[in-house]
Length: 475
Image (tube, rainbow, N blue to C red; front, side, top):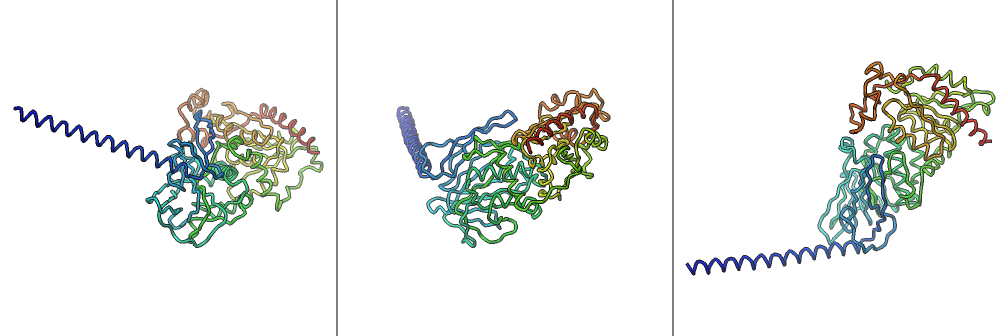
């Protein structure tokens, strides 16, 4: 019995001793890892500046955005901003977008959509990104091509060498829609370029490139960057860049927050860029409809196309007649995906008032001059979107903004659902839990408007007075 007890005590002692050794070994490894991470951070040349991004859905996300400045930074980084390797850094803390930077020479292999960077001292490390700023929208992000960032001891040979860095993004997703082309593409590109490369010397690298996209926005793209665009799907040669930024920074719907940009750019600066793009080879505006144009403000009525069955003005002819009676020269503008933006700019830049029902065509309000007038007709159930999407354009461009909110009797939904249906009586209650597709489709795809001419006339008179005041200041 004593021998058995002695053997048990010896076994327990041996086990405890082994556990103690294991604990000391683990602590040593942990401290070694912390030391190694801190050494990487201390050696990293990418400086991070803190900014707060606030979104309209009442969620606030604090993120760390890398600046162009290149200097040593010895502070400890949080987990969200921890460098992936000595040269590759990815920030995934923002609601709207991911952003990866390569702070050093990189080789692009367009055939595999991969950016390579040499790091002979570390094992192969791979990061992936979908460079499109709608991260919160799972369905559309699932359709965006994923790009690779690889750090390792080797990389492909360089065929074409560039002296300027690259900004890489996707022209897929909703880009076929004019609103999304600006909101998810051109404005975020302007923000990103202003944040990283304020001198404008960078190369646009596009994933999911389309010829029609380049053709439609060619003038703006040329002002943003003087270099030819690199299209991943149309190129087989490897390209070398001194550095690269993958992803686009977005501040919100049709928004540029100057406090979040080192150069304090605003939506007005973006409008200046548009003006530069479309006045280099100006297209003369349409001739005045009145022999004395200075006496009659020019109003552009933006209408939905014949191929669109919703958010149309059912009594449009009567509305145009009221506009003329008040004193406007009226131009009916019915854009489609083939509409020349140069011609649209020339027309709106020479106009005094723009009126239209909520929809992507109102993105053309970016072409209005400061202090002109913009009136948005607000269908039932679209109140939050009208302000978030197009109301912000007016505020950002110092345009006089009016909203004509239709009543239940002016909505075609009344015939289908009845005047007392909660969809019409209290849309906000229906939307408290979000805007699911089935609800969104009711308000956006099933609804037309028949404007109350008496009510609408009052709003038009207000617009007329603002327009005349604007015309007086033009002289």
